[in-house]
Length: 110
Image (cartoon, rainbow, N blue to C red; front, side, top):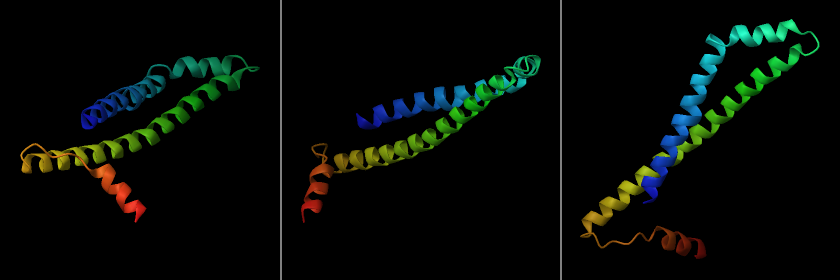
């Protein structure tokens, strides 16, 4: 179950946060550049506001890439853990119990 939920979380995170944000940045530069560049140069009193917004959007994109990398790494661990659990389960006739947590506690107590 953990592997399925991890896969669903990672998939939605990567599609929306990384894929959607990439598409939004592309659109910001390709289709929206004339709009925000015009706004930034039209009003000299508030010209930096548009640049701050665009810069903040890029910082947010960097943050999403940072967390996206961590999500991918966690997904890899979940898939490996899930596949090792299923292989040990199938080799023991399906009655295997995941004792990873108790084994870890036992090692820490020693």
